[in-house]
Length: 399
Image (cartoon, rainbow, N blue to C red; front, side, top):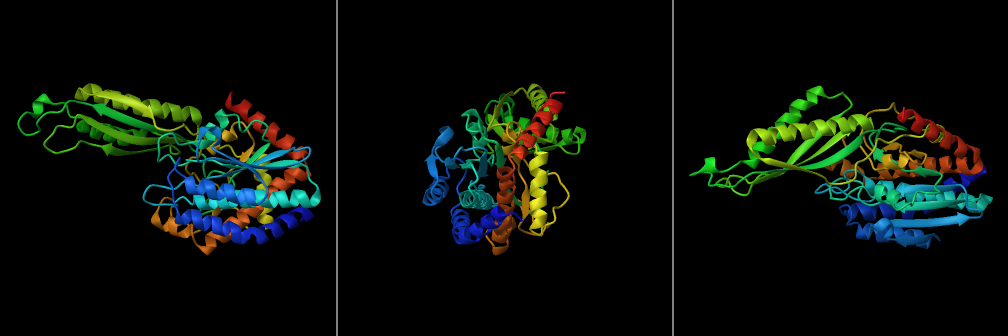
């Protein structure tokens, strides 16, 4: 192992109490996306304490963070992506407290190795709000992209807790988040229902239609919905009903095809029931995550060097990191914090995300990310290779 990687490991061990305290604080104070005020402040304070230049409220997001440390001439420029939003009712049942711990830890460890061994480059930590689609306007990384904050970045790193150690596949599905509203006409449900137009009936029919649509979908696609508004009282014909749904697919073109099928189904229901239907995207559309082959290979080698054997790829969820992966070489590995019987977005996963096993797994993930970052700093030719791979992937996607 190169001396710089040994330095990074030593730095991480010294930083571990601070990193675990960060994770524990975030887990104990869950905040929904775009409301992560405590998380933003805590991450920013830690980075400032460690000598990073820090700005909050970037990309027009009040709970965002950008912390940077540089050593001349400042290239390559590596970005570690932190998340810290929680889920409604479940808290950190997706373990974003650990994502923040890993990003900050890997960045600080990389910085210490750069400083000790005179390695030029820049390390940035981006605290990106609202990855979960639980709030309107979610997808902070897309806002970062639109603000130009990824211009000049040479590679991006983010790691997510899971029940498996994955290099690829854990966030490989793109996602469209839709709100579908049916408008009808209210009436007395007991004495004159025929004078009304039941929007709830339309919502139920649409839900059933989408359920039937699943039979047409490729195995890798996902479609799931909830009814969020079905009326106010049984004796009033519902004049409005509303659903929220996600469409997911591993291919961007197919993702948009399924979205159109969903809309066609809802339009047909509206025509059949005499209602009017409206569609609204509740947050940014997430593209499938493209794991950069060069970064993925380096991370795999470093993970194995730490005694961890990666698991075979499995289909997973979605992330706004996918949008970043289209324009900057990126890896989004997953690290195991619990048995495979425990699924994400459950109370059991939230409990696991606060335990010592989770912190140990996050510590090793941070070390593997730092080692991968140092591979690029020690051999800048790997950065060029990663960019060639990204351009080749872009060309293949364009046909």
